[in-house]
Image 1 (cartoon, rainbow, N blue to C red):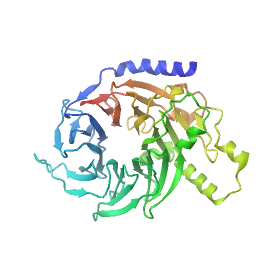
Image 2: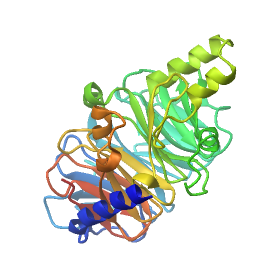
Image 3: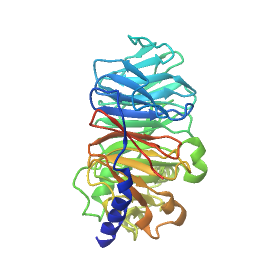
Image 4: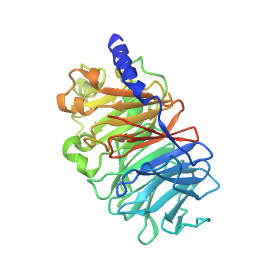
Length: 391
């Protein structure tokens, strides 16, 4: 525990410079999500429980440049239309609404309404070709919507047995998405066929772990992040997972898929040999996975979260993808220099946690912008959107 204490103390010392964030004003209730423009530097868009969507330009004053009152219900998730960031999708209740920001008006009427989800939508994302939306909801289903037609393309069901919290398209696989939920499962879907297969059951992983000091919350999957296309050369085809037990896990998706396929095609690997491969390695923060490929678990022993991790992203500033930034119900944001592990292996883990930021409220969402300062945006259970500088 001395190692964990020193890691956390060092991160807390670094965090002092984050004590006074910029505060962006425009919402009347707590903020729920935020996204950063790729085409317009320093422009971010946020949503809130007030049913409002706010556009901010961080080169200007700390007030919204544009306010869109789009719903009487909370806006739970946002995404841009890939390749045309004048178009934005906002989920509220069971509905997804599409707006064109160029059609500024006092009363915002959506260009398109998608009412395919049966229960509240938790996450909406657009794919790279700007042809599909994916919407994860409380029923455990993921709806794939063809936005060119427009029509419902496919319903992905019978995978999750509880609420589906999150979904992401895989940029290197044209017709596949990855989803996570309150059943602690991470699933890969071929949405052209509507089929899924399990990548990792984090509930089973935690049950088999020797790390009994972790908090007792279940290892639910609250959020996932995948690297963007231009990050793949350095980051490999990985996935970062925000877990309900306070852990951020980093796994190699392609290796996990290959292991699952190998396991399903052969029944010969059983007994002690198989158990040794699934067991923990010499490091408590790394396990071997099904095929010997190491999974990295960023937990409290490295100075990590002490409550559920609600959101995470790969950083866009500096060396893109160098940091994984996570936010949690412990009111903290953690900046992980996971690339130090990637470059050197297990080794000395003391420098993986770069810094800790005390936000003062439970964190709902975060995003980053490609700038040297004011590059981390945090939405929490307060009315103001906080902006920090991470170097």
